[in-house]
Image (cartoon, rainbow, N blue to C red; front, side):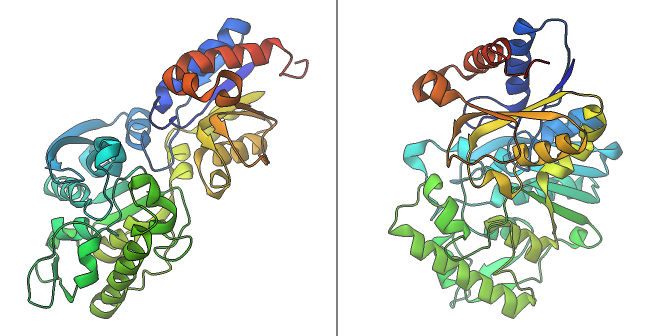
Length: 369
C-alpha cells in the first residue's frame, strides 16, 4: 500500500516535517511493508518557506530585522530560481512565536521586520517575492511593512507614526515619495490561508486579535484604527482594501507592494508536486494543530483532502484538537486531545501521533485494506 503524509505544522509543538515523520513512524510500526511518502505541507504560515525551498532545491538567506516588539531578530528566507525569487515567511520576522504570551500586545506589535526582509531580498536582486502571511503577532495592517519599504505614515503634525496598530487612529496622510523604486516591476504574491476581511465581525482584530493578546476592550479600538487606515489608503493611494480577504497584512501588502493574494496551500502543494505524489496512493494522512470551522476556508487539511479525493485516495486527518463535530471531506478524524488528554498532546505531540496512528491502523481503521 502507498501512503502519503502531508500535514501542516501543529502550531506551537511540531513543524510540518516533524509531524509527517511522527505520523509515518506510527504507520510503519503497524505496517512496515507499506510504501510511505513524506510530503510536509504549509498554507502560508510556519513551514511555508522550508517546504518550498526543499522542494525546489533553493538556498537560504539571513538578515537582522526588527522583531514584533522592536527588538532585533535574526530571520531567514528562501531563494529560488537562482536567486530571482524570494520566499519570505512573516512568522520568521513578525511571528507570534517570537513574543512570550505575557508580552503580546497587538496595539504596539509591528510588521516592520517583514518589510525589512522584503527590502533585503530586493537589494539582492530578487524580482519576485512570495510572502507567507500566517502566524503573525501583529495587527497593524501592514503599516510596518510600508514604513520599511520607504512610505511615511504621518500624523496631523507631520510626524512619523510610532509602530503598531493603535497609532494608526492618528494617521493623517501617507507620503509615498520615498517608496523603494525597486518595488516597480517586482511581482509580489501574498500566500494566505484565510478569507477574513480587514475589519468587522470577521475582521483581523475580532478574529485574530485575541490570540495575539487583545482583550475584549481592545478589539473595537484596533478595528477602528484599521478602518481609519483603510480610509486613508483609499484616499491617498486610490486602493480599496477594507473588504480585501486575507486578514490584516494582506491589505498592506496589496496597498504598498501591489501584492496579489493567492491561496497558500495550493501554492505549496504545487511546489512540492503533491498531486503527482498522490497518484496511486490508497491513503493520504494530513493534519494540523486544530481542526475546526476555519479549516475548510483554505487551510492545509482541506486542500490536501480535496486533492486526495481527486486522486482517488482516502483521507485521514489528525489534529491536536478537533472541534465543531463536523469534519466533511475526511474518511476518518483523530483528535490527540481526545485520545491522550490536552496536556500530553501538547507536551508529547510526536509520541501521541505515533501511538494514535499505529493504534488506528491496527484496530482496522483502513477498512480491511
